[in-house]
Image (cartoon, rainbow, N blue to C red; front, side):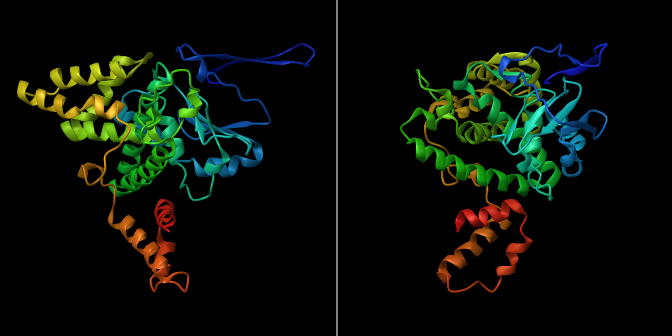
Length: 346
């Protein structure tokens, strides 16, 4: 359960076993979850572990053996992890989502267990929700970007610190491609193409897309560019402390940002005004478009390797199916996300 185990009681006749759970930290009702079945638990460190079916345990435990490192890295950036233990349950193939961040018991699809750890970023994403999504939650689904934009930002900070800045940029490059595909599907005049979808009686699930994830991430990347990486890391901790165990909207986020810029980093009044002007809050939250590398170099997420993968795909296109480029074997040296860059371009 999305709680801590407390008791296991067997009835006198042995017919019934009662399991008790406790969670003293308040959570929204959508985060309450139960898992029932032929499952077992394995510890992977002092405060991390996995749950899955016995036949899957060896593969799951091997794939997710770095969970403790990932949790430590998110904690370094966002502040103390308040939940105690962190457990991922890898579910059967019928589970329809990549992951769901139920506190203390993240649900994950078996599609993340691929043998090369290339999908472990899903685990990092769900871990990061322990801060942004669980400890702080969006008040309603029009403010969903506060859950997802922040979590993608934290996920990519961890990826960049563990695997290099270019690794995180390639993740952002792929995410940006998905974001523009979704915006074009909704139509650039639809509020669903902004990070503040106006539901007005429409089904919240209809607004679900990469927008809150990717444009939310880009908004935070923009804010980081205004005050620098170190100051923005301090803001992340400040934001979590200020809104811990509350449900908020973009207005509370804006208030925290303006308060931090004015009071916490020693800027002159003139510098404060410039940062707050350049924040361009209304455009980022309500505008239905998005930044481009041409309009702002901050959002050029290309890397030498991603350019190479794109060029290789273009060489295949130029050949028109008549053969392969001389350097075709370079493809086999790409890690998984670079292969996706290649296929997207193809």
